[in-house]
Image 1: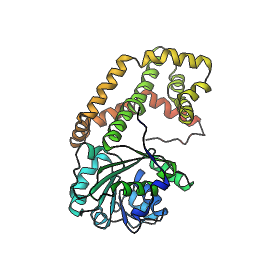
Image 2: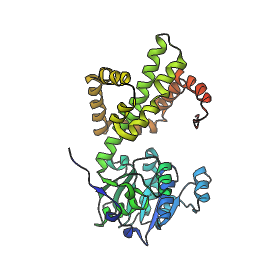
Image 3: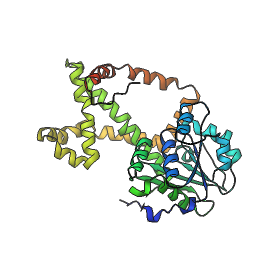
Image 4: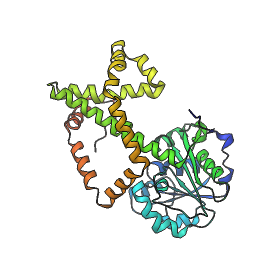
Length: 335
């Protein structure tokens, strides 16, 4: 097992970006956090956003004067692209590439388009990544509390010989060096990120929740009770693991629950499931999933929308909308 190299504030001075212009393309979840944190760290920041959009107005509210992506690229020394993966290639070809100059640095928060070569920058620019391990609102709120969210740093292309220094300065500016910046590669970040989303955090978890709920309801139990047992209480368990790992969660639950965990869990996630996980990892590493997703977007996301609609109307979602109204302490969000 290898140990990641970790950089802290002393190893990540902001000096490589002092006197330079950071251009942030997009003022969404990550964009608003990187823009404000870097500005509050004493760095010069400009924002690119589509005029008239909610994010454009939010950037203005936060004291920025948004410009076009093309203008931001012309003026920026470090250009941070925080747009959704599926929009990046089109914006890159139309507004970024024509305005790049040798010696500039392209920054990404996720390696998808670089790793799978949907964006291929010229050889005379740096290509780096700072990927906070948390959503933008957490990156911002922790920064405001004089803390930081751990980040990953990677260098794909070092045209200037100073790409890592620039990336680490960016990571410090956003607050990541306060917690620690772990060194990785675009390949490792991209493939592990996609795998985690598909197999555990999103795909695996939602499929497990729905399957458990359906099993109880089909056996004659009340959907409301099944909702509590299979979805609502997930947060209680996840919060314990978030604080202290699997061992702390097991320390905190009943002995009965712990015994059931240790003896029944492996029957659910067995060798067949792990074999399917390996297939999914192969699909990610080979680029098959990336091609599938790019084609899905290009053809109007018909399958995506159909699958989303089906789950949005699932009984567990219908029951949940009613039960969450009973819980005043939840900051209820409905889509």
